[in-house]
Image (cartoon, rainbow, N blue to C red; front, side, top):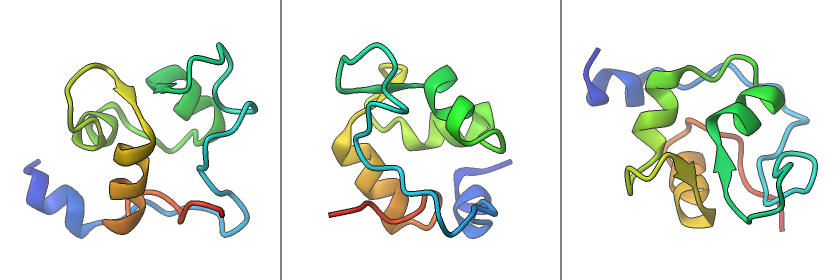
Length: 80
């Protein structure tokens, strides 16, 4: 699957879930989200989508990557 096709198919997410920097998701408190942390909060998150969201390629999502994912429709909008 290409990045373009992944972007064209937003994830089916619940309207009540907002992926803001949250201690509920950031279990280890490092300010970043790992794939296991995101998948625990969003079971529908796939490895392919996480890799697409991880713009830096470091295996973690930072606030900018989360905002970009929300803007692309791959994550729910950030709170605040």
